[in-house]
Length: 447
Image (cartoon, rainbow, N blue to C red; front, side):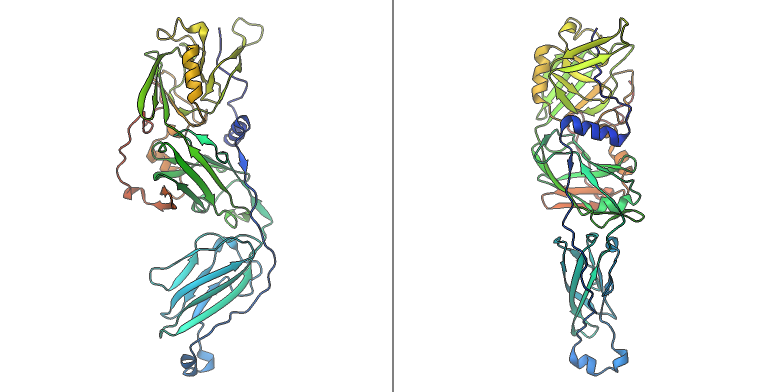
């Protein structure tokens, strides 16, 4: 008689669903804009050549041994282009330092041949910069160049939200979820501005779900007890023509213990693995033939005790409006693991629910106590396929499918020192197996 659908609708756009989920769990965080400078005077390039080298040349033929971009005196430089220093005629770039009113350090990389230096990330908008570079000319004589400029303040900008809350703890399946308030067209530029730091090494990738949401998911489940930090350098990134990021964000959260549940709709049991070991096997009752629980590897979204569940048509025999205890949600359309004392006689024997996974009160309370957002929940042996975006369904996708959703099509190797983009072909073989270490390919398909 009891149903399994709460009042939250599943028919929401991706971004709206995320924000709805964020409101339910109260962990969405809008990161504040970084300090922005303004103005800044212009100054000509001051180039110093070795006096002996200069004396041997006619004044009109003295080259500029170090060329800088943006040019000295630029007042509305494109921040997305960064800073480039180039040595002319076989010279070498040595050291480059950047002082800026934004307060954000500007790092860069020297080319393999030493002929050029380029900043790693876009430059913060609306800020002033002074660049000082040293190097040598073609004859090996020391040279120095200095340039000052300002970056533009954009007329149109985008902002970013991260779902994870500062210091919060999540399950081993939890993706890093970012949303944008403006459609992103240069997705690769945004990906390259994102860094993942993990206290234990992981391999993962970014995946775009439309133009306003991007997620980071490891190839396999996160190692238990990992501290994760998402850092961005989005200030100055041109996410769409004329639309720039105007803030950076940083957020640190935790991955807790590994808690993985598998519900077998055909054998009427759920198994719960804790720390990689089978800890519980409980009788269950899942969705009846007319409304089966859908297959798929989901993640716990939220929990409540009690949760009000409403379904059917009011005034008909199928209508219900009940409070249900020890409820852990895994789809937006309203599927839960929850206490169902009314169906204990059927648990382990037959499927009688409206789509939820029915447990005894004691088993439901035990699972509820273990639950945090992001714990994997896999439903198997169902005649009904799972629906993409009905819940956090990132683990519906195989690793190759997930990589295909990246704008760069590159994997991300993350560790205590940050992350780098690498070719997937260079990665070591994946040795994780389902259901403990990762999800199975095609897990959402009907059985």
